[in-house]
Image (cartoon, rainbow, N blue to C red; front, side, top):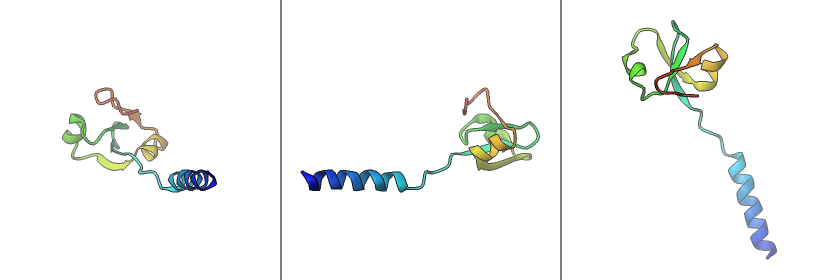
Length: 71
C-alpha cells in the first residue's frame, strides 16, 4: 500500500513540474486584437500581425477577437 501511495505521489509531482505549453495567438499590432491561429481574421491578416503567446498579447493591452472568441 505504501508503494502505491508513493508512486501516486511521485506521479503527481512529476505532472506538476512539466512545463505548460503556452497558447499562441495572432496579435494585430495596429488594432490590438488577438485571434486564434485558425480564426478567419487571423488568416487574412498579413501586414500588422505577429504570432506571440496569448499572455504577451494581453500584456500589450490586446483584446480578444469577437469572432473566434479567444479568451
